[in-house]
Length: 140
Image (cartoon, rainbow, N blue to C red; front, side):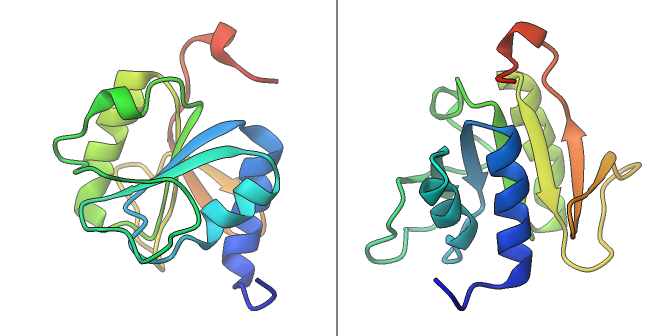
């Protein structure tokens, strides 16, 4: 894992410091953030509409963000996505609201959605488009 990109390391570091149970949506074949989170003791799984890569190394569920199985995400304190297609963001926001958890997105380049959400600079820019509304669900 020494060849991991700086971006993935910074994202994983921020998530590991602030969350305990996460779901990566639209993971595709780049599971680097999820693997790093596992190493840090974060409970994490990945989802994508396509099949997982061979031996993904992290739990992987086929699910469609445009018609998600909400049961998969219940109990998460974070849903995140790394470089999602822009049209996925409204569906990610709906899912985060439905399960009442934070939503973090790392966009490709200067993409964004709506007002850009809350900007978090952790060495890279993350956008928090939804924040958990139930304070008793907070882990810290």
